[in-house]
Length: 411
Image (cartoon, rainbow, N blue to C red; front, top):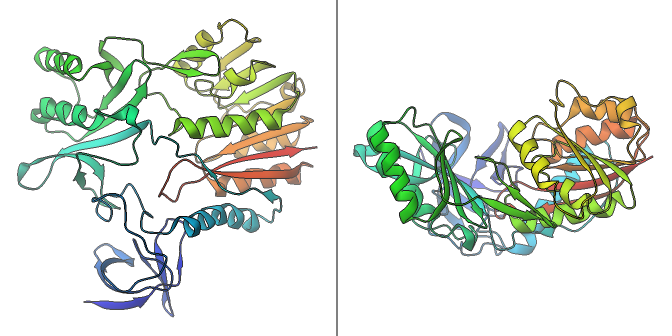
């Protein structure tokens, strides 16, 4: 059945929302003040598929990608830049308000830069047994095949072609694949997941295609298939050789923007704790002027950081594996620190926030990819006696509902 709806606002996931007496209906790819025709979305009682925009908003613009509206990667290519930026900053303001917090919130920082330097492509034989390689459709177990993505950095040129080639080699395995591609200074670093055990012939075929596509390294579930060069990135003055499937900020500009504010907020701190450090995008930069104690549960990341910490000119970095969800640093351990930096996954760091709140650490710098869990953790710190003095939203996931946050809290 076709319905006609008036869109009132944009929700936190980037969907247009029609307010009805029975409750809100969510319509992706629509904008406030638009009249649209929609149809039912099987399995989603509160969502509708957009059929047609009957009366368009003056803020609607042409998307930059022909796959927009079918590929689930981008939500908001159709919205004028100024309004999109206002909305993305509002996600942080709303999260703070819901937690009962007030602070100086800076203008949104555009950190898309050259584009995304890492991506996860999916491969599967879809309808009629046709191989499809691309990104997932919006809220559907379906792959949208692509041959180009305009939000990827030029350093990922060749990534989609390489993913197609890998999928062709592994197609007989009849398993869905996740193909993680990361741009490094030595070339593309690719980790393939989902293939299961492979025959010697298929491993040899993967090794051959890695040469044709000039890959720095190809791994399967973290195990090296072939490596032609060490896949490394520069962090500050250090060079980090990445573990297979390593986490990096989505864009180089995003990492630089976050790190610049972390350094600014840490000020003249002489000893800094870097919690959830990863491969050290903050620790290695901070070590140019401060002693660092870094923690993460990923042993491969800690090993990569420890090796990079040997770079000449850096102050000491003590890198330790520790599960901060189960074993957060305690107040007596935090007492030796002049500043604490923490950058947890999306679920936040509730247990660690409680321990920091009970400590006397004078400066806390919180970095987050989730405004809601950031606000929850910040409220714990504020209730423990900290003041939330400054919050900066950072947009490295262009056209998506995701926004990063960097904040300073002090006693």
